[in-house]
Image (cartoon, rainbow, N blue to C red; front, side, top):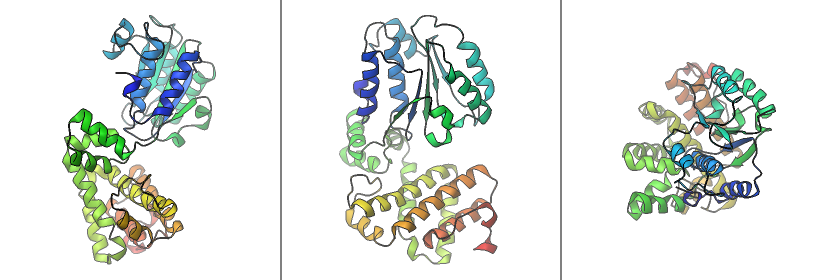
Length: 342
């Protein structure tokens, strides 16, 4: 594997290779962007290149450092993942102790945080103290889906490298070339992947996820014409996808994001869900800009409420869908998720 195999992230790769060539390495990096677009792959290539004993700008994959990393057995590379739902202060305390020791074999000691946005407040404050005065040999790399959930005092101490959603064509080509899909199969999955190669690959392994997306999109496209019974039936349908509910919210948000973007630029270039421009033109013309912005905010808030509280899920979905039909005029909150407020 090498930087040359990274799909659709030319700018992040160029930035990192420039840092390697100029030997201007920062002590803290934040790799931010959607899931499945290559953040972790690029981070690991960067780590291997940093410690590679043969090459300067990329990993050779043959030296002992590269081979130890590939086998998850490199003593100077430490990965930190959430314990349960959080990265906890005890994990950071272990790093504080570990970081005081110099690298065993390499020039750099690297700490790779996966899902860094899941650090609780105590852990984040503890990490901040490390970032304020890191040892000269230490590098901390944070991977995050949601940069805004990290403390500003942490992000301000990091070199931020942002990763964009992949283009449909990039995903399609990768599915054809590396996974052997036909052009039709690859395009169908690429169109529905939301810019995420990882998700597109998961579609090749489980077609049921594709079915969920198609069913949700088919219903939401007609929601303005639904009566109240059909709204409640749609809510019942969403309940059957309970195990994939976060994905359902993402489908809805992306759908209205596409309408908003198309309404602004009248181009399919940045659109994810559509391969029919006429359908997109007709749907986007039914909404004002402000209505689409309110609907996106409404779905986002509902997703957060469902995730963080014990709200009645069925009622929350019913209220959300009713307000979507009403073009996002009223926010969904914990206190108004009851039929008395419908």
